[in-house]
Amino acid sequence: MKLKDKVAIVTGGARGIGAAIVERYVAEGATVAIADLAMPDGEALAQRLGGKAFAVSLDVTKLASIQAMVDLVKTRAGRIDILVNNAAVFDMGPVLEVTEKSWDFLFAVNTKGLFFTLQAVAKEMVAKGQGGKIINMASQAGRRGEALVATYCATKAAVISLTQSTGLDLIKHKINVNGIAPGVVDTPMWEEVDALFAKYEKRPLGEKKRLVGEAVPYGRMGLPEDHTGAAVFLASTDADYIVAQTLNVDGGNWMS
Ligand code: NAD
Image 1 (cartoon, rainbow, N blue to C red):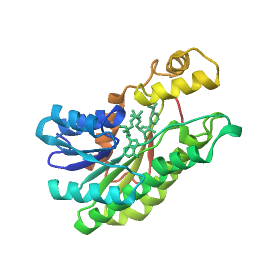
Image 2 (image 1 turned 180 degrees about the vertical axis):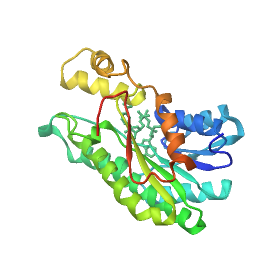
Image 3 (image 1 turned 90 degrees about the vertical axis):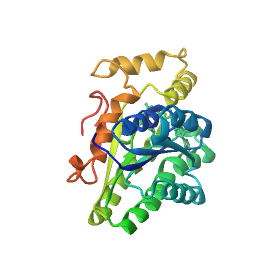
Image 4 (image 1 turned 60 degrees about the vertical axis):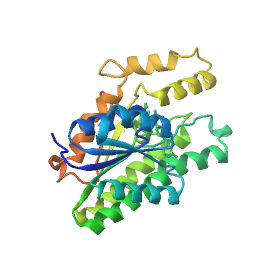
């Protein structure tokens, strides 16, 4: 077991990639806080995993909610060793139709929320003086722009940049900040993505999802479980000397 007796927080852990990481971390011996807006889903997952996981309400767009979540995890589990900064939202549309509301929402969750969750957890890790591991969920969308996806791509490019800057600043406290950049992953988020591509590219539902899956060099779309090995590795002592990197876990879609 690579994470025996560690305490981890997984934001957006109630479903999709986050839920797969929660499940794997528990199997590796960690106690895991499932920190999510979707409390019923988080509680159902926690119940399925027994006493090693618990759900905590979190809205990353509200700093008070982030602090309340951190305080609750500290009270329940005593400390925080690992943060997986995974919660995010998606939207897309032609550049000429992007609204301020959509722009602000994506940046509030994907970028500002991620940064201030990292800051609140890092403060606890520094106060404890035992270091820690922080993993930011980026995306291949952060590696290059895409015509209909300007805002989401920009939020994820910012995640890669923040991983570099925060990683360089926090390593003196023995806090490793690294990132994972998934490619295309079969989660509830991709159902939303597919529906939006169907609207803007005038395709039948399901076609975009099939095409992007066929285009992956590995031969299929990613599954949430495909990302758990990297999430365990980056949270373990095996990754102590890895600092401020973002690892592509995308079946070969992207080179960098
Ligand atoms: P998902 O939509 O299936 O799950 C996201 C979770 O985040 C949900 O449980 C949701 O309730 C939670 N969440 C949303 N807003 C929140 C908020 N304000 N506060 C707290 N929790 C909130 O997403 P997923 O596909 O599992 O994606 C997980 C991560 O991987 C995201 O960062 C996403 O950008 C990234 N990613 C996904 C893909 C993909 O193809 N699915 C590709 C690349 C990167």
